[in-house]
Image 1 (spheres, one colour):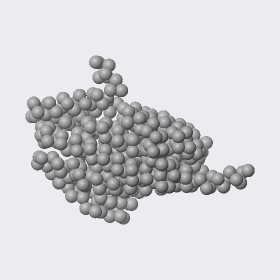
Image 2 (tube, rainbow, N blue to C red):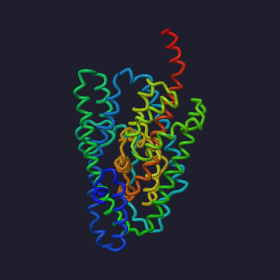
Image 3 (spheres, rainbow, N blue to C red):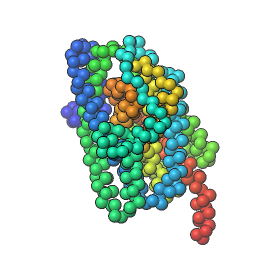
Image 4 (spheres, helix red, strand yellow):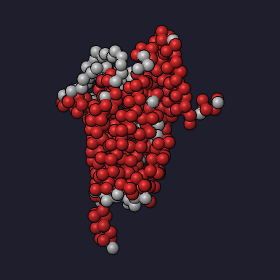
Length: 409
């Protein structure tokens, strides 16, 4: 029993135990549960503390490991365009399903309300906020968008310099391992954080919050399934010529890994092997597109961000205007590149996403408790999107590759 409670493999088991114990304490000791909420707040602070470091190493790692400036050319541009279009389409579907179901409105309790305004700057302010006059000040202030811009410029420069920047690349890869190890340490505290936050949630809001969490999970899975059919299955069939049965017959091997590990990074080797061996995608394109997609193509993240924003805004009775929804999608698309391909990484990005929108992050505690069930769907969408994008890009390159082969012979 002690090995189960201490093994990293069984983190979700411990989170489940913390979830259940938090419910009991919230019911039996409501006063004590409210007084000890600071423990959960410390956990949330630790998550927020890691946002900037995780964004920097995740985005830079994805770019510097591409290998050469040539690989950042034509296929790179196509990849980014496909990834962004796929993300926006999936986010739109996520928003539609979320606004149809609206799980945040199905809590039969009085909402605590929220006095702050949702962030919705003008176009000029938006771009001015992206470009800082002092990057160190921006990082110190926790400004996420300027950090992403600087990271992109820095990483592309490392690739452009080439061999002379090899020590920088090695350092960044090592730094990435250190940062994610720290994140591992913090994730080990998740059972305690969930215990405290769930106890507070039950003491403050009552057991009715579970109806919303159950509906939240169902909404997430339904949106993922619908988006899979519309955004991935149909384009692969109609454009790449791979029938739905053929695609599912191959991709289910990837799903087995993604559902069990909830890690895009861990699923990467299987995804590449299936793309090359089962889908017969060109190895040269697959070796570029699929790893790049693991870093910056998060179709599941589109569902996650859309549902999270609607859920939190409904729970706190904060109406989102059309410009705010558009801003939501833009922010989600940019943050999408920073999503770490590790189990639970979406918790960090979810907190940063709500922070950028000016929405409260307190509900990330209860959501963290059920995040494994959500992450199974989100990660599976992410890796499926990588495979689908690879097939679409490979098809678009088919004539050029055929022409190149004829010239070479």
